[in-house]
Length: 486
Image (cartoon, rainbow, N blue to C red; front, side):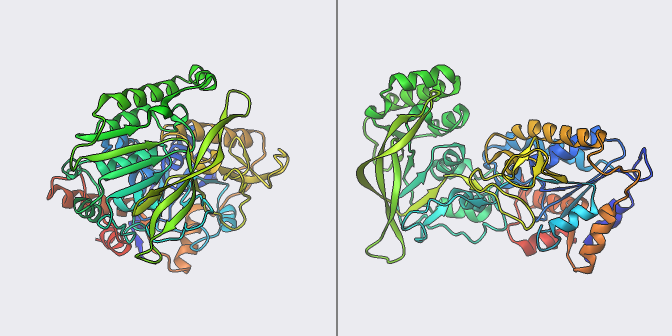
């Protein structure tokens, strides 16, 4: 087996209070996975914790989701790398759940399996024209500019049009808008992928429309993200005055949420702060509220390519508890563009043998304990199987949200151990890490250890230093594996 750095972590010693230590496998090396590993290592002395990931690089969305101009958000990597230095911890990268090893096999190999692999797919709108060229998901675009190896070949056309439409007004949508509109001179010294930087430097995009179904009071972004995009140098901001009119129901929402009130105040201020018209060549950001996509329009000149979005005007309808939803009004208008980025939600990828609630987009669970079906019957538990992060609660929250999520899941594991719901570590040894490595060896799976990742990390930083960047990411699978084996 091509095993990078295998000896290092196989020879690590660990103390244990019983002849058979608690053997844990966490699937997914993002914040949810690492916070869970940290909590288990602290709570259960003698436990052996392993994180597997389909990528040869750890840290999940911290590496491939956090915007390149947000380096301070990535500082949590320092905490995770300290976890990885624990003698009872192992990272095994380049392992795909389902093909490299099955969920059933992991459950046989370990006392506890925690699924924390997040959401690597996208919610589909299900409207005509969604498969037209030029219509992309925001996730794909984020992967593209962040150097994710699966996003390397996206190649969005930023040259043939001056207008981009982003569907959604959450933090991801604002990230994408900011990357499209921010001067590239401010991105040069970030860890943005070099292919993305080149494309952005040559980009013709001058207008970005952020389209939301509801109003400014209900915008799903945070104040920090909004302030940042509103503060882009020499950017014209446009918000219709009529969209800023609030109703008594809006007032109720703002009374209940300080965040919603702050968002509304920032948008209101931005609407009147600048000139009424953009200057020649000025980049523009348009907030379009109370509209939802009905279908994507195909270009007459280029068959198969998007040329705009057919939008339906919406109105808010109260549904009780102070909440309002958007409903269509039957009034339509077209918004011309050459590229569309859908930021309408992530979706988790299913694996064989895992119950899933398609409606909620989560694995059915009670405090992280996986249930056998969607009935929420607490007696129908999948013994030894747990969930954390977006798979547990849906694609919501910030990085720190996963800390509390992990604490709850680890508390459930601890309770189940104390109450005998899990097999006793003393009476039931498990093959654990060694057993997993044997299976992967038999299948010729090339495993990347944490020490091998450190070689990738070191080389990326070396290449980055030559260009005054924090790192120059490897964006091709073969490059990553080659760097790991040096």
